[in-house]
Every structure is written in C-alpha cells, then in structure tokens.
Image (cartoon, rainbow over all chains, first blue to last red; front, side):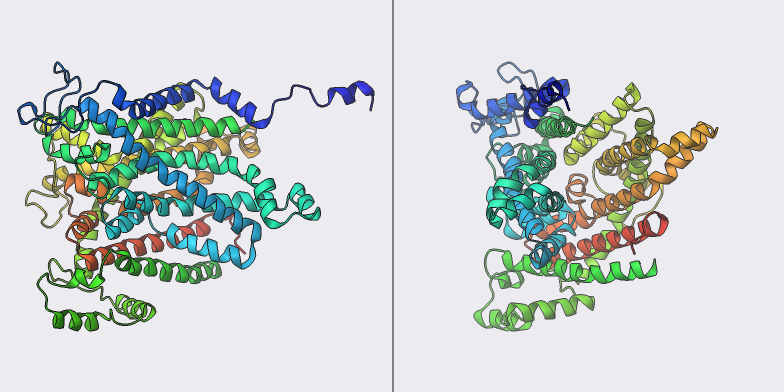
Length: 292
Length: 317
C-alpha cells in the first residue's frame, strides 16, 4: 500500500452517523413540513396563556354552538358557549401530555427490559420475554380499555394503562436489537478488558441499540395519541371541564345535528398530530437507512 | 407440519393461562373492595360476609384464581350485576354482532389494501405509488372514532342517506342480511376498515417491492414470461405474509371494536364492554375481556399454523 492511499483512507472531515442522518432528514421536505406543523401545535399549546385567547373555561348560555367564522369566535363555540379556538389550543396541553408521555415512559422501561433480557439471556430472558408475550397476546385497544376500565377514569390511570400497552412492543424490539449486537466484536473486547455487565450495557451497547428502538417508538406516538384521545372520548381519561381533544369530541357528539362541523374540529387536531408523527417516523427510518 | 402445529399449541397454553391471570387480576386492581362490585348498595354486614364466602373472596388469591379459572373453563363466567343474566350468554350474543361488523370491514379493508399495496409496489416511486401510500398513511393515522363522526355528519346529518346509529330498523333486534339492515352496517364497516386498509397497503407494498427486486423475477422475465404471469409469481410469494397480517388485523377488529361501536351504538362486544365499564359491572367487564382476548390468542395460533402450512419455505424443524 502506498503512502497516498493511506492518507486518503479516513477523510478528515468525515461526518458521524448521526450528523449524516440529521442532514438527510433536514433535506426531506415532507419531514420538515411535519416538524413545522408539530412545532406550531406544541408551541401554541405551551404559550397559550400569552396568546390573548378567550378563557377556555368561560361558557355562556346565550352564545352556544356558534358556527365557524362568527365574528370574535373564528372557530365557533362549543355546547356550553366556550370559545373553540381557545379550547383547541389549550386542549393541546393535556392531549399531547397524555398522548406522548406513555411512549416516553414505555421507551425507557422497554429499552431497559429489552437490554437486560437480550444481554443477560438465559432464564432472565425467558422470564422477561414470556411475561411480555402475555401482554402482547391482547389487542392493544382491548388491553388499554381493560386496564383503564378497571382502574377508573383519570389522567394518571390513562397514562399508566397506555404505558402498559406499549412496554411489551418496545421490549420486543429492544430485545431483538440487543441480541443482534451482543456477540459483536466490540462487546467481546469490552468483556475481555474486564468491564462488568452494567458498564457494557450502558457504555457499549446502549448507543448501538437506541437508534432502531427510537425510530420504532416515534412510530408509536401516532397510535398513542389516537388511543389516549380515544380513552378520553369514552370517558376514561380526562374529566370535564378540562379542554382535551378526545373529551371535546365526546361532549360535542350531541351537537352534530345542530352544528356538525364545529363538533368535528377536535378530531382534526388529533389527526394532524398523528399523521405528522407517522410521516416523521417514516422519514427518520429512511434517513437512518444509510445504505440506500 | 403436524408436529409444528402441536408444538405451537403447547406453547400457547402458558400464554392462555397468563391472559386469564391478567383478566382475573383486573377485578383486583380496581380501587376498593372487589366485593363492592357484586354487592347491592344497601347490603347488610351479614350479606356482605355471606357473599364474600360465596365468591371465595376470603380465600388466598392463588386459590381464588384456580377456582375462577376452573369455573371459566366450564363456561361459568359469573352473572352480570346489571341484568343478572350469565355473562357468557351476554358476551356471545354481542360477539355475533361484532363478527358481522368485522367481516364486512374485512371485505372492504382487505380488498382495498391488497389492491393499493400491489399497485403501489408495482409502480414504485410513480404518482400512482404516491397516491396509494398517502391513502395508506392517512388510514393508519386517522382517529377512527372521529372518522365515524365525520361520516355520520356527511351521510346522515347533511345528506340523510344512511342511518346514524343502531343495527337495524327495530333497534338492536336480530341481524339479517337484507338492505333494511345492511344500510346500518355501511358506515361502521367503512370506519372499521380504514386501519386494516392502511396497514395492508403498507405491508403488501413493501412485500411486492422486495419480491420484484429479487433475481428470480429477472429470470422469469428473461425466460419470456408475460407480465401477468410474473405478477402471479409475485402474488404467490407475497401471499403467506399478507395472509398472516390479515389474520392479525381481523383479530384487532374483533377485539378493538369498542370505540367504533360506541360512536355508532352498534350492539356488539365493544358496546357491551362500554356499558360494563360505566355501570361498574365488573363480572361482565372481566368476562367480555377474557372472551375477546381468548379469541385473539386462538386466531393468532390459527394464523401461525396456517402460515406454516401454506408456505413451503418455512421449515420450522
């Protein structure tokens, strides 16, 4: 091998894996539009008190169910005369909280369980994975409703039940990714150099398994948003008078003969968040697939 | 093959016991004394004690589970508190309506999903592909209970073409396959079909793409096969996975029908579950979930065995 070949081998400005993925996702138009829409919804929910909106709790019997485009009520009013625009924006706070936190919780718990099951193997793996199989044997909607129904209505109970629904799915992915990485040379090297199991899992394996699990989890946010709002829609999540998209759909259902399109508005928000997360997850998956 | 089926069935036994255990525990994670659920509000202390013994709530949990499981295996899921009728009879009556809905939705969702998936996979990266994948992603992202409301708004409220709720002209009477009844089925079936449609489109598109990029397709074309004949080979290769996904989707439609049945007041297992939750009818809640979950486990088992049977590539030694 000659000198120039040796010098040319590692380009000095070679980008890391994540930098490359980042550049690819930024160039993807669909993903960026989704990021923009999600940012808009997140920020308006977060900054709602500073947006000079009407009071989302203040109703009035004389201005119930105004149509979309009524002066002062751009998106109309609900069945108790509350301003829909304010309720939709404030509604983002609870809806996003109960929709996204189960995935974050399940991501942490499931990654940990999957990493342990995949790395330790043996009877630990059997114990964890067979328990997971039992929860996996329920259709997710049924499991969420069974647990919520038994625990009773409430935000915490709804988050707990959805977390229980998603932990098995994430654990399965984490376990299979970990098993694939476990016998790679660098793990062997770490073991040979005397690192203990905890250090190997934390320092050497976590970074290598997190990517695929993360992409999988982003795809679950869409399902989680729909299910969380669905639990509230059934009356198992948020309680009135809190503004929350699923609960708003539920209480406005009685108004579909009076003012149908105002009644449908909260669903548009759920749909928008859900489809943006789905498209973003697809974009992320293809951006991480560097081979193509 | 037979030995695979047998092993798969043996493997399902611990899952079935686990699922039963989860259902059993549902009553015990409920806040408060599980007895409250079966007790009239004005019950005396003596009656409470009597019922506690009768239901076995005074025994240790594992013993209770064993007794409960034994009764469940013999078809005794207890009685509904609201109606006093046996839970199993109530559930089975409701499930038949859910099956009707799921079959109608499967016919719509599976055929559209297959069509869109094959077309999108065949004409990858063309405008046809873009339209099909957009429909698919909308299908998997839409909150279906909201879609149900929107369909009711368009076809019942605005156009007045189809009924908004119920399962027949006489409310929730016996189902019949005539137009008077099918009118009630159309909107809930379309609503139920969008998620399986989206998932099957995405799966079949990916499958078709994978198969078309394999060498044997090149060989078939080089051999001089017409494109329709090549298509038959693609179909045959995609069938086992596609069928497995469809089987699972059918299970999800049967078990996850509560939201749509609530929107349309469709008198199936989901609506039964809904009323069980809000009347705090715990035996009914537990029984319905047990039956639906068992359906799902058994369907999964059948799908697995069927897939192994029709796919000669799967040699599961």
